Image (tube, rainbow, N blue to C red; front, side, top):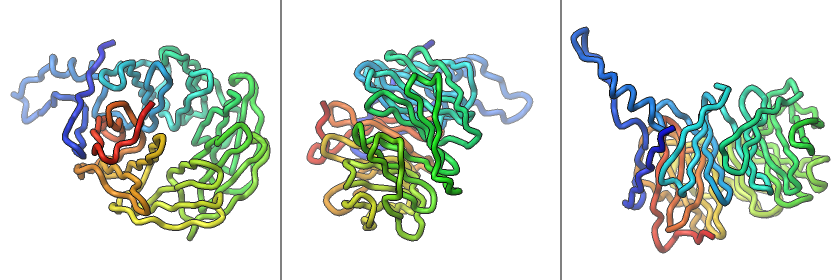
Length: 330
């Protein structure tokens, strides 16, 4: 499988889509069909038909997943990418790294895929629930967790061989689940719902509600007390009391917010229209200059003041951060 380099763009704030460099234009029956160009496009690691959803890393490899079973890996901090073929065309919804550096990913057909440390071997494990699962997380003890519709949460402590299930029996979707530590976890979802667990995920209770039943597309909690959620219209809410109360923060965008990218001290958000935001004091400042009508959904903070982000239509790019505001990276 061919590795495709990710070009490093050193103009601050400029978003470039890394997709197929060749295009096929049919203008009539006499237009030649350039089969070599088609072949080259098919060998590209990143394609215009890709819609990336999740990006995570361990100490060896970065993994990016998306629609139709798309899975890319990079062993050189995003400089080059390898496209992997899975025995599935189901779209990936979420991805996480376990304490042993293995990976788990959730696909739309309710399967949890286990990836080895190198990200080169992936094995599916079917979930037992009839409810649609939408997010996945690996707990600090290595157990696997999935959550989704009807406030359903499933977990496995034996690498997907057996599953247990719990539910709050509410007709609402959980689409974000994060473990803060071995005992504490936070989940957010439909109707502004915020849930918490203080016993490792085995029991859940309501921590609070977002204003006006705000639907949280994405959430990130730095601790059980402080967290952020993002969603439509560029809205980002902040809590410092574990979700009991929320304050809307100023943002320099009206685009839907789809993901947060944490650093050691900094925090970034990605949104529609190839938008990248940085938390600067009490507000979110736009640090990207592109207005492409393509969403960004996921990313990682990289060495050398770089932010690697991915989204729709093969949008996978390397953003150089302003030196004064760049976060440190181990």
